[in-house]
Image (cartoon, rainbow, N blue to C red):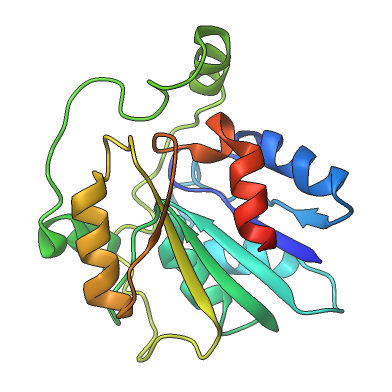
Length: 205
């Protein structure tokens, strides 16, 4: 099976590495491109192009989008042959919505403190912070240019200890916007770091 892993804001392909290793060990192909999040001239179109251009022709892919990559992933699904779209602790966009609008439109609660890596061992959390990149405002005001949700099987999984997108909040948003209740797994906002085996099991189910 071929997986395309799309990272969220401020992060990179590094933040997928435990899941990448686990999926590869199970015999899957993994493509995890680095988005141009630190390039102020790159908008949402360039993010989508980066993903599409990283995928060679061939078998249909499973697109896995984390956090802000929900906006990129939904557009990637219109340009690649996709067997399944999986949202992981992800923002679920509405047609034409801008990333900058999503927070107010959904009523996302504000929170303070370590919103990303509070559940990880200290050494892994420190390296995960070190691997973060600057996030430009390039894609924030670009409309997510789709009119209806892609006609591909879609699943969503949310993390029970996520402080950025709390469980009850993201469950409500996912249900309202996709019409299906999300699945749940342990972990915080980066469950691919804290629970890669659980997430690999979910993706392969």
